Amino acid sequence: MQSARTQAIQTAKEKLAQRPVYLDTETTGSGPGDEIIEIGIVDDDGQVLFESLVKPTTPISPDARRVHHISDEMLATAPRWMVIWPKVESVLSGRTVAIYNADFDLRLLQQTHARYKMRWSVADGTSFICIMKLYAQYYGEWNPKTRGYKWQSLENAGRQCRIALPNAHRTIADTLLTRALLRYMAEAQ
Image (cartoon, rainbow, N blue to C red; front, side, top):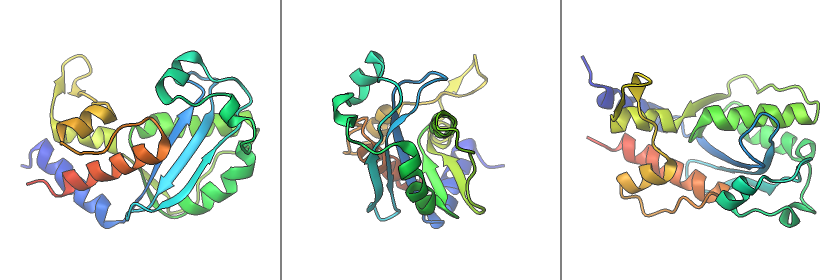
């Protein structure tokens, strides 16, 4: 029987072989009415496929602003979500999409769609993998309250693996750190 860590390494190898794209978002906050204000996608080679600020319909919460340092003024001339989504969708179409904390980013993608009265759907063949959950299994710190592996922040995961990329709370930097983390797990023994 394989250990959880060995299973995580095997899954990381399988996902890396699919040459995923890596997605990250920054948002107006984390609540049910919040929306995306920045999205970035890089490919398996680390090349930027898409990056844009997004003008929201609501102001950024002070807590969110303290994390990502994106101001309402920075977004004043940014395109709205419905303008950039077709470009994002074409980049993601039919791909494996690796996200650190996929549940959060997918929820915010859906919420942002709902804000603009857009129907949420992804193209056939598009799949998502949560690198945060995979890393939790790899790292192996048990959480008795949830009876599962304890999630690590992206910043802690990078530090724990001695990856010399910052968790800048900006999309491209965070996608590159997520990419490095998946590679780290796939190359582990």
